Image (cartoon, rainbow, N blue to C red):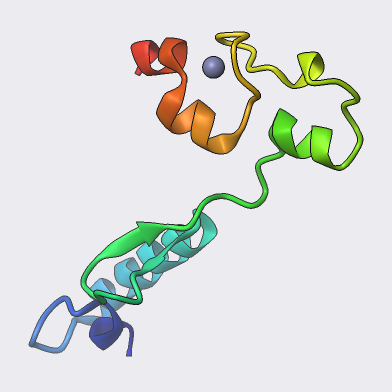
Length: 95
Ligand SMILES: [Zn+2]
């Protein structure tokens, strides 16, 4: 079933390949990666709900001011997952 789900091969997989594929699938599931609904051959990252950014902490009232929720790297924007991973200049310079 996993083989058809990921559209990997036309032949049956060996037992060791199924074990490796299952481990890969578990790793992807735990990382928020899933098959795209539009294209089953494409994987998409759905975000990581368990990351508690300052934006989240501000929203639920643990942080009390916007200044407390600013990105620790650039101090210019609120720390959100998108900001940290895609938009923050100092973080991008380090990658
Ligand atoms: Zn930043």
